[in-house]
Image (spheres, one colour):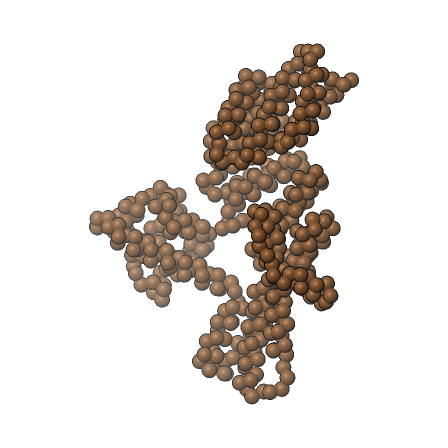
Length: 484
């Protein structure tokens, strides 16, 4: 059952959620099929013994009905019913976290049943709930609009024709909801247009910008102000806008849902990466700071798991800043948050990267020795670590052998873009020439200076070049010896 949807969703539940799911499925209000109840208990037991991915449908069917032969159609029917119950459980779990929407559903029922004696109390409770909510995102304003609609209708039902603020509140929060959502979508569109060269167009954005510049009341709203400066950062790419946006994000983070925060921080990361690619290495510290905040707020965890790419990017950034103790602690703390199928490769690669950065070249090679990377990004990164380690250890035979294998891999791979192929091919060629230079310098060969100048010239002429900073560092190292 390794590829089963049911197995997949059960694995994504926390232990506490699994316990609540058992209670839910056992409740006759939701499920009266005894075999479906037993199926869940069987799967939970296998999950606890770490056998959920290896056990077959036939084996589970036998555990469920030991006195009957395997009937695929009957078994799949049980699986399908249980899967639908899990979906229902998840929707209820979500609904239970939305106190305002629970009151909205209650009010809908009370109005439908004309239960006038209960409506006022329900509205009052909804107001108290709203006052405790910190978020000021789209859902908050939609909830306020709906509550004021009920309050307005209740006043009319009471034949109370005097002025009350509920209709105005509906209007004002609708304006806020519209501006928030338009700015959020505008940011998303601008980001996607940049990254994937899409052609999204945000209608009325010019008018909205003019409104916000003319009427500063709206920019007093923290959510609108944050999105406004986010959009300015994306459009104008100015450091000042990034700094204002980042500051607003820190002080107003409670105004946003977890999903919105994750996206907003990603915009900050994307901007910082662009600045680094433009030559501003100070933004490594910005990226490191953003990642630390995202880890603290658990924004990088999806389904309680950390993606191998976020894991790798965090390690790469912290190594770049020489925060080696922090990096080692991070790897140890978060390795278990990786998906089980990614753990071995991700852990081996990142431990190798850390060991290399600390000049433990043999340890770095040991970490990569038994790893088979199917992803091109990992594969390229691993070969570069190996190549640079052989260079530092002066392992000529291993270095040249890997150069040849690396060239073949790049040439044959269909996963690597033409740009990355060119960048890595240039790196391989210059790394080989650097190794030859290293030997000549060691032997005090008179041709060393000439070769150094050729490498220096190629570094300026060739583009793109992968790992250019490493090449330049070594060229500078030899300059000190050859240009005395």
